[in-house]
Image (cartoon, rainbow, N blue to C red):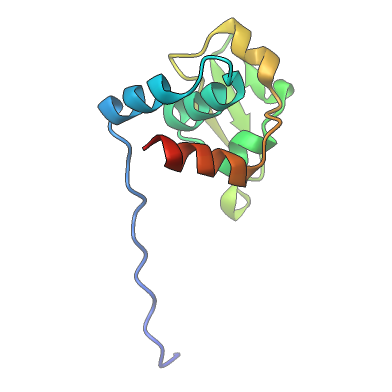
Length: 110
């Protein structure tokens, strides 16, 4: 047994629905990639790295779910397609922005 105590992990802070609506209003209309990215993250609970790695073949529009392969910890899991998902959003997959760019847009929007 190691003498070091385990480092306590903090849960990520959740975004409230009102905050998300305000964030979406601040994104310029022409920045559809950011809108799609944030809807996927918020509406499906995807990590930003999962949003960036998402491929069209991972999305089943008929069954309304997304297959996430080899996520954190090597776990595969299905997640629901966001209720806010619209057909035009499929055209922006894969996301052509870096994780860092999306993080900056998110942080600047709050």
